[in-house]
Image (cartoon, rainbow, N blue to C red):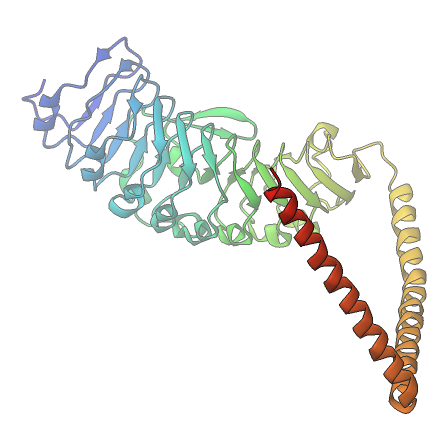
Length: 380
């Protein structure tokens, strides 16, 4: 097999164990290697001309092999569902430029590399189910492959039954001959913090955005409605606050939405596009949300908000006059004392004499106390 002119090799879904034979390096015309769903481990040969590499669902461990750095023609890199660990290396964004990068369900830690922002061809980014920390790099909004249709995409479109698994609309979907049409970003089930970068809303061609099961805070970006191709949005199980942006009514392709278990508040938008999403479970766990499809009546929340605002507006002038009274009293008292000292020479002299006597008494008391302490230490 290692002496043939193979261009496509699929040995997936077998019971292969051990190492990948190094002799496969001799297959100079090989452009697709699919070894997913086996029990392979260790050693990844160098394939200079390889376009597609599927090693998902094996037993690979340790840090990502540096040999992958040499696969500079790679368009698809699927290393998901293994046991790789350590930080995701920066060289992925420095040496490679894949269209599909899938590192799903490994043991990676550390931050999302900023070098990912250089992956101009990227159309599927899946780093879900790891232990990544830190914030979402705002520069991911520069991924031009998710903002504009890549003209080179059809050059690597699937011509066989190779597949890419993605979570879309809340379920695992196995794409075979159509995965070249999918544009998806999945950063879910990590330990990411901070706000959702508003820059992500520039990714106007993105079809799926999954940020669920993290520690994200702040609000949903107001201009999320600019992402007009979105079909699936999952921000559930974070710490998001504020109102659901009304711009989501512009997402005409949206058929799956999950905002549950956050701290969102206010009225749920009632636009035409969000009306079909009538399942209350997509909003559950946000106690201050109101309006259909939830049973919470918005009149209570709006009355409370209005009364609170009126109370605060009524209290504001009182606070102003309170501080004015304090300042005027302070100014009057201060200049009253200073004025007396300036014009009553006798009072001024008595005040200074009293201050000197007090300072002398304090000084003498301290000196005597120190002397007594020294004698106590020197006594046998």
